Length: 182
Image: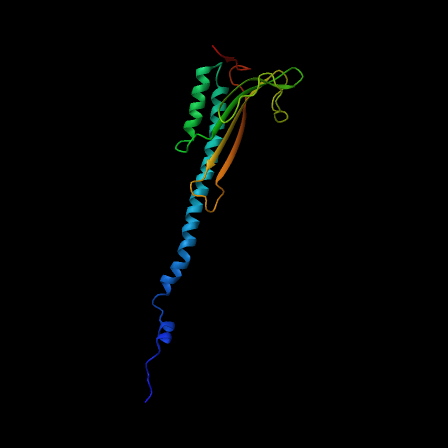
């Protein structure tokens, strides 16, 4: 008489009940990594937008003033730090510079203030700006922001992104804007 029972190996090979679970076990880690990588990439892109907005905002606030005092500068830099919230602002550097052109068009630093990881430009030192930005005997406000965004989970992305943003704005009410220190 012939044994019609199948061997255990043949039964396992034909059993299809666990295929979906096995496929999920292969695919799930890839999907989870992709999700976290995309979330971190979005966080890095948002930090870049915030750094750009901070540079624009601090330059715009200075360009609207008729004069700049020490308290104005500290308040403007505080606003720049708040723009990055809730991201940490420990790696944030901000600088505002009044660039003045003489009658020949040569540009020098009229005054400069900085906060965080940036240093102020030296008053009277030459500074290069893009061509045709200002004419002779005019001034312009230059705002610089540098920000290092540290990725919390650096499996798929670099551990840090460095953003450097520069904005140029024309003074709106007086030209040049005087810097007053008590």
